[in-house]
Image 1 (cartoon, rainbow, N blue to C red):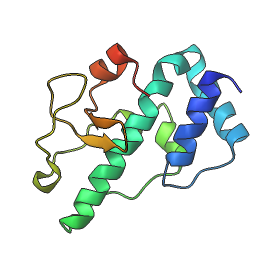
Image 2: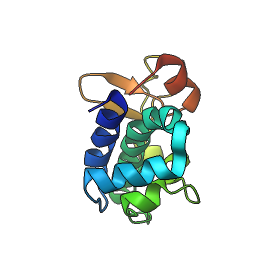
Image 3: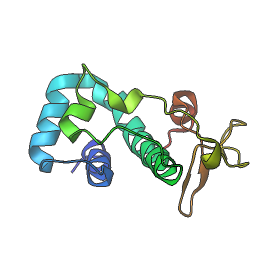
Image 4: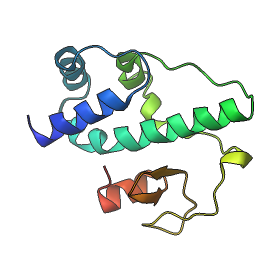
Length: 128
């Protein structure tokens, strides 16, 4: 497996919604994005982690949130749900700052510290 395939598989396994097998998901992703996959793949895992944290905060506050789409729809070029910014929920706000930039942290990775979900930070520090 290439590094891109490994990272895509990591995102696919992390995704809480309905997911197909690796081969059809990878084939569909490559078909839809071509050479852009190199730019997109590093954004998937942080986007999924951010959206998971958002949904947990919504559940805690008894707020409505959309259900998970299937992975194919979540990635589809017409939807690009992985690019959505999630609203901030007061109970989910931490005083922590991103360990890579001065922005507030929006999620925490076990053993890896606080992170923000800004695309600039992800791109600059090559976060996966």
